[in-house]
Length: 165
Image (cartoon, rainbow, N blue to C red; front, side):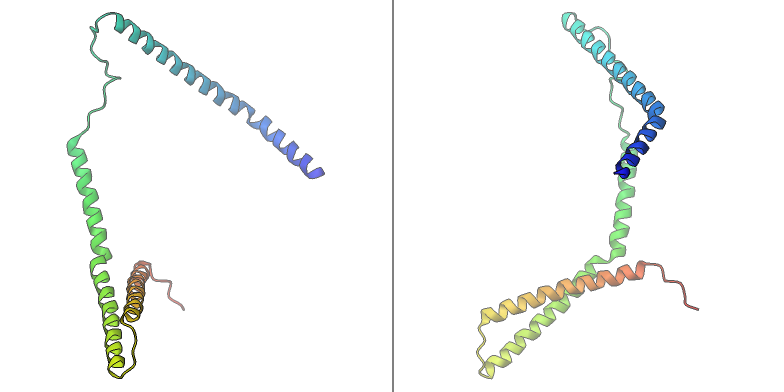
């Protein structure tokens, strides 16, 4: 029972210490909100006035959109492209996938050859069963190969651990 009283007392003391800052923050927020309300009211009034008479004044600088610097955007896009291209090249994704696919297809072809030898020996195994088994093994081998190559690349990129004495 004393625990909740202790926590309540600590919370009350914290609130007392933070009250001046919280009061100032609330005052600043309400002042800012009041400023927004006044600006919105002024623009509504101006809109009503403009509806009654033709608009004679050009737009103010505050209502114009900032101009977009096309050259800066092109330079930024070129820099992002260069960085992305370097990362893709460093990742060596294409050759990794091709190696994993080659290994998986070699395993699949080996299983078909084994099935052919068994069929010639007189052991009938349905072709659809062989296709399903070979397909599953090829997919598992492909995914495993890609993962193993990715894992090796991650380990190679990590800094070497400290040498043992």
